[in-house]
Image (cartoon, rainbow, N blue to C red; front, side, top):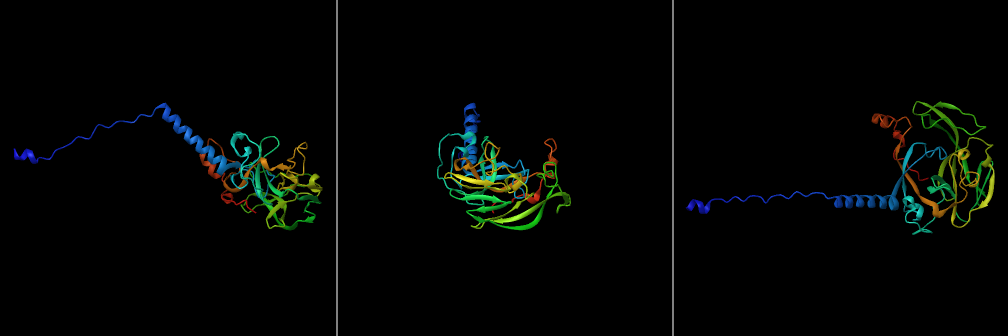
Length: 282
């Protein structure tokens, strides 16, 4: 009897209740994920890819980069599918000269160019020389830019320029472009390409940038339909500030175009590792 009084009791664990996911809880989880992704892409950062060579040598075809959304405030263009629709900008501010911006082009597609002129600035080009507010922008000869040839980066030149190739630093054949370092009065410095002295846009203006707009140009000056060309001529014209999506930041991936979706190994063999983390700030 005494033994039973001091015998250790054993208690069984309560039966477990398996939680079952209902269709309603699954839908709720998906909505939360979708809302978080929408907020991230709309307010913080969004991905963007480079489809053309208009921003060579700064940006190469196949670069994938992050675009920050907060530097210039928010307009309807900042949001996917322009939802919610509204006019003007919230917390708006102007880009700086030299910033590379992504904006909604006249046909609705996102475009990337460099900001050259702000409201009130006078912009002209004479013989390929950029003139800002009546003063020639400092422009010095730089080493030729040799772009490695790859499936997505052929040796494209603007007539009457003649395509020239030589071995690039990577050991493959590269397309040779004359390059110049351009320095804006307030400090930003970057390299531009000037393929020919006979480009249609080598002589332009002067024009005064109106309020609410910015003047943009591609770094590949002879192969860029930018603010030097009207919208009717296929260019960008003056870009409304309200159409700016964000500022280009850094590359997170870059491919030479040789990858195949059905061959995962090729995704990495096509990777241009020297482009990873490339900083687009001048």
